[in-house]
Structure formats: structure tokens, C-alpha cells
Length: 286
Image 1 (spheres, rainbow, N blue to C red):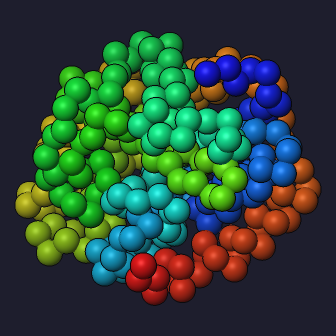
Image 2 (image 1 turned 180 degrees about the horizontal axis):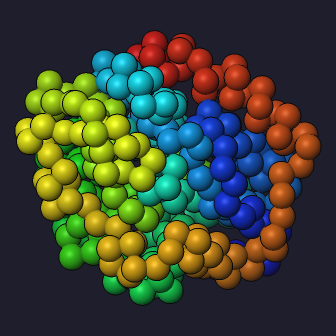
């Protein structure tokens, strides 16, 4: 599918809080659907954020832990388990385009929109690919430890390194995903209220030096399932982000762009009225 004859913009990595990052995706979808530029971007969650899946039970979150560690909690429009987006260890991206310019079949659409993500990994020196077959879940609340699916989970030798998800509005498709630059297993597990996980206070995570785990679902088990760009390629975070942005831009011939003032204003309102509210994160049931 040829995408380069459309108007695309690349928005380089920006650090914003979780509610604002999710609101910007909705706003980008409205822009694309209204005839404006399609958007590819890399982004950073700041502060570190747990993004809950669309239908995830709020009771699965350890809200006290998140509050104590300064971790923002919001809810995504996409399904699956929660993802802990460490401010340092996570690199995220999104691709937003009109629905009529992309395959209507979900699996075909994943194949098209994950092309630049796989290209980025290869440019980084990471031998990543879609998992060839499903892997069973080992911890349901956490997205990176749920069952791996060949359609949208990317792994290195069976260890997950990226998760990708899509949702559709009436006129647009939004795909977003998380690339594991480094591992922060203690905080990644600590945000979940799993009775089998014990929490104390001490951590090796760059962003959270005060978190630790019992051995019930421990960091070693996490590392058996999850790997990282840093482990696989040894490059800096800046180099990884640059490779991702280059791959996204090359894929659709995007020019470097920015949000308009109107988009930023609309996103701030949406973040305040939706993504930052208890009604959306804690009280939503369907």
C-alpha cells in the first residue's frame, strides 16, 4: 500500500504526562479525518505512567503503590493488560491516518502499520520479529506478561520487546505501541494489585530507586519473558529513538512537523475532562 503520496508529519519525541499523550492521539485522529496531515510520532511518558487497558478492572491496579512512586495512571482506548511506561525504559510511538487509506482487515492493517517498527528494530541491530506462535500468559494484568500473539507482539527469541495495538474511530485508525528500551521489572510488576506479589522498598529501576519485589512473581521471571533494546543492541536511548523516528518518517515520507496551537488546546481539554479523571481510570466498567 502506497502511503507516501499523502501528507504525513513526523512529530519528534516529546515528554508529556499520560493523559495528554492519550488525548493527543484522539486529536490527531480528528485532524487526519478532517483532511489534515496524518501523524507518526515517538513519545515519552513523563512522569512514568501505567496505561490501563480499555476494559481492565481498576481493582487490578495498586493505586497506593502508584501514588507512592509518583506513577501516573490513565486508561488507553485499546484493550489488553496494563503497560508500565517507565520514563527512561519505555519508548512509545503512534501512527494515525484516515481509515479509508488503510486495510479494513485488522490483521492486514497490523502488518502494514508494524512495517516501520520492525524496520526500526533492524536499524538498531535488534533481530526482532512477530512471535511465530502464541505464548501462554504468565501474569494477566500486565500486558508484557500476557499471552503473546503473532499478529501484534514483537519478540527476540521468544522474549517480548514490543507490544502494538489499534483502535478505530468512525473515520480514522490509531495504532500505538511500546518498545522496551530497558527493563524496569520491579515497578512494572509493582503497579499491579496481585496478591501473589509482595512489595517492599528498594529498586534497580533508573526511574524508581525505591521499589522491590518478593520472589512470588519476581524480576527473574519477568526477564525470562521480556527483553530490551539495551540488552540486545547496547545502544543509547537517544540512538534508539532516532532509529524509530527515521523508520517512521521513511515509511510514509513524512516531514518533521509539530502540533498546532488548536490541537494542543483541544488535547489539554480532553486530557482534563477524560483521561485524567477518576471516572475514566477508576470508575469505568465497560
